[in-house]
Length: 232
Image (cartoon, rainbow, N blue to C red):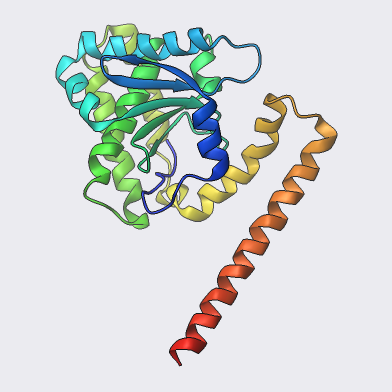
């Protein structure tokens, strides 16, 4: 569950390269892609997602039929901000964190509930909503997860309910742009270590990113200032 990436922004060069280099398969007409890092088997990762989709198809066929139209792709990759899942409106993709997908503690039904959550974002994003509404949107998505869980065997249902209960106390500002950027920055070191980047090099990368971000912000300020002078 993280910030929805909007259509107005294009995929960065790095994102396009990562998607191009990912491996995948088709399942019921839905594309599954995986950007795998380390010793994990791509086939295993894809199998895990396929098992999750099979859970939805078996226990909630009507929701599964809608999901196939709401999503164009499921893309497993590292979610730097620590989210288990996200929705990228630019490519109609449900993103799943690689660490979440390969975890032995995560059952196919857990992955299935996250996919249901992100597919709900896909449906709601068609109508558009502003930043202050994100808390309400997340509540709707969790409600869909709960409705899906009602169709599962009791053990799986109870596990998903407990997860949803933990989210009830989260304040609306958790979903703000500012907090999202903060979570992203805080997640960079762990993500880099997971990728095998030497510990001594992590601060160098973080510093370089901050410099690039600062330059971009300065460029936007200059552009707005220049635009104001032109209109004047």
